Image (cartoon, rainbow, N blue to C red; front, top):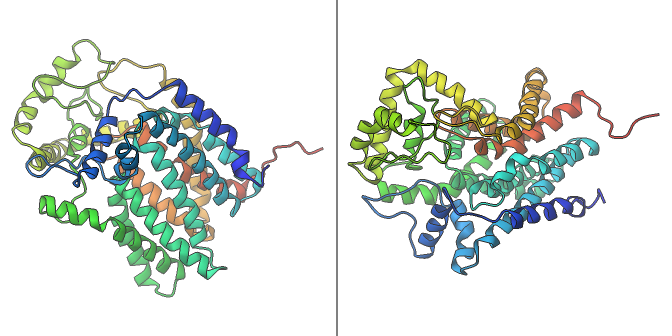
Length: 422
């Protein structure tokens, strides 16, 4: 059975399908927006023109949704596809791990990912996360194959696959666009210092393929906005992250417009009044504008808040890291019992991060290049995520890379036996 991962992990596919059928989608939050963008693509455009420009998210996931929307399939078909994508992500991670670690360790960490129930929170939703799990796992698999120098033709084919996958990842989660730019700059510097290094050249080639993949989107945003390298209109996240008030922790609290605030069902008494007192005047100014100008207004106030209160912004970053990993803390919110589910499993992940850092730093040159490439990619993403208002589901998308890293380090430093030795 272990030789056939499709059969080995098939019980999880059944589990995911049952979970989705038992908890059908409720179509709240961001879900309708992705379907709307997919409908826009079917109608021949993505964002409305100025002044109502909306580039809240990239076209990667809406492109995936286009066939479902065009055929008028029920939403349950999309969420059932989530089960398939998650199942395939487990198989791809297992196949990648088998190439670099012992079978027992590959099996252990693949099972960990299959049982990583924090990721289940979006399994029954029309959100980007489950699609991103699959794309990240494809990236892991293709990078491991791309840097396989024993088979040049296969390696070349996977170079293109890895680059295309990075491009799709950027179009799905636009924050990865900034990761891509930083990676291109860093890899270019490394290659210029040592042009004979095959890995540096190959890594740069993969990243440039990724950049080429997203270029049509950047051309489109330039045509729409007149701005070069414009990724998204998401500065409201930075605005909330920059809040200077002691009783706010940088978490996103919605759009204070016309005297209302979207906070979910966990308000504490008086929270709306406090938010209006803190942010009402800002929002009156901001909502005089639309589209790009509104986004610029959010950005101006956020930057001014950061300049005026740098230490408070630093505190908010620490709180934000807590939200990324442990789903805590939130301002003006009643504590929810489900946080207790996040703490144990992500505490294991966090502990493994701390454990693996030391041997990684001490043995950096001995670590296989695809893993080094992935670690830069991963930690640049996590670093940028900590600067804007973020949530635990933004951390989950990178967990497959972390598990690949854990498996490699543990394989090199610790022996694990599933069966007892006599």
